[in-house]
Length: 219
Image 1: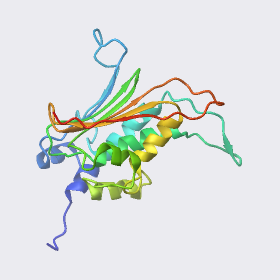
Image 2: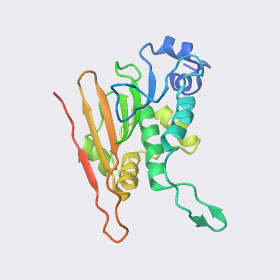
Image 3: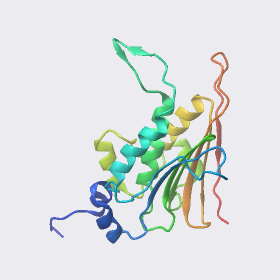
Image 4: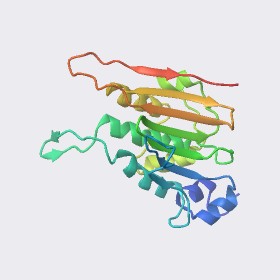
């Protein structure tokens, strides 16, 4: 229209909770750290838009990525004289979190849900996948639901170019000997679910084994 103003993507990325909820009434972000036994304690840590912080996607990412990676081991690796405090597992978790946020249907009834569990991690976003799960895992096929959000994350060096995000998650996670599952479902609401489960540590002398399950549930 030629009129200046804030886009919905800009509001979701940098806005404040009340304004975001006014534009997208079903918007809800939820991070949970779960104990091994949830019968006594439902969660050990939780981040939701409770009014104590902005509630936008950028601040959610910043808060949650620290919690996801807090307990990961970092081997002592030098590049020149600089220690590299990063691993393929760190990279896979960063990409999984960004991928969840940029592919979410913020008009959908399911919430964005990120869970840290003793068995691994779960990333759920509202909305079905826009390409088949197997195609997403193999790469080269992309139909990003929120292209402007994707571009915003790219501008701050987060996320991957179209069609390469999920393969990067798969490569980093499976290379460490862990299991990855990607599926979408209509029940109870339209949603996509990425499970990143801890596997047995892979001895250095063994060839890499990739354990990936892709399933699309439509009933």
